Length: 444
Length: 188
Image (cartoon, rainbow over all chains, first blue to last red):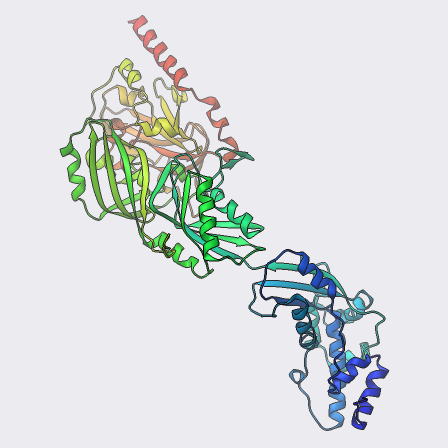
């Protein structure tokens, strides 16, 4: 049963004298001794208690910085012994302590938690170890390499792992050996876990929304802590997702946006919601359909379609739409002068009209002053009465429609007032379509 | 080319001669007899986002007297032209000239030799001046409350409300104009 050979004896004696534990000695000598290695069970407990749903995980381990010093000392000793046997050893020829630790503990974590460890997993468990007893082990490095240890704003101590590693790379072997024993002294206690954090990477949900209310902002409208209008498009959609995905928070974005008093009809406007630190991430397409139904049942101000999980990369398609694609609108226009059908017919024939729009006065307090050239691709008029007509327009993305109608003090040129030589204003505006073919349409 | 002079009563009846857009989002404030000059009345249109558009009030002499405007200039002194106002980049109003209430905006030169100066009437950053009135001065008289505006001023956020303290509301202005009319009729 005693598998060590005579060749191992010298090695075993040297290691024993430094306080290395017998199990490690056996391992080091290549003995396949299957013994329970110390697994931080409190980590497993915390992970299980955290309420996350996961099918794999990535482990992020942080060792105390001073451990690098001890590792360095051990390596110098190994290099020295190899040298005696006329063998040279590079730093990369040895196995890093953390690697070895992972080799041992990953299978144990995996078995305990019932899932594989996968470097690409979105679910991250980070564990930070500390060893208060040896905290001062690395302090001698500051005297030798002072510029490695500059104080920075966020750090509690200048002795970070990065700083210690940097200094160890710089320090000469003789200087190191003068200050630190090789092999290192035996500590009294093992490392303790001081921090365990579980977090899941963000997941993304996309869809298209219709807006049927003329009194709903896209994002919450709050001034001086006081909410000016009830709810918002983003809250009506995201609140349900936040609950079901058990996420900490969300980020809502869409392919353009409309004003409070504008409806979004047709196929709706593409949107994407980033759910931050979701605790639940696995949903069947049936479950997503039910979630869509739930959102639609809870409000008649908005409706959602094509709700689906998407990747972070896919979001690019949506923002692409904002700059390049066209949009169509329908506006109800009032004129001060009485008009007849023939007075508006000419608008139907205008194609690809170039207009110059100075930043509208209504947004000038938060947008830079600039002139933007935009194209009105086509228009279609529908006479209502002597002072009203409906105008359908297809325009380049980023066109301010209201300003094109009333002229914004002549700062949008040309405009409906100048084209018709009347004073006109817009009474109602609807978005009829947002011509972006993302996210993919789903059958109902 | 001058427009037909309106009687003060007619002008009052029409005020505010602005499209409904203005009614919804803008509030009309007035300053009468600016810089002590009789009937040099200004109308300041303040948007709910605090931005002010400076215009001539209907009762201003330039709109009342039937005069022809020869030219308009933004060169208000040897060293200062409002056209040189450069508003840079993303920060609202950064780099712009800061105006006080009585800061001159532009000079209106009439064919009869008379000269009128328009003033800012409110404190704030000068965002832009209307260059189209330089090319076609008659717009100032044809559409004083829309295309004929003179300048756009952005007050400081903390002064959004206080800048209107020295100005007249629509009702107060109407009273001033009526008093003026009565005073004129009384003496004639």
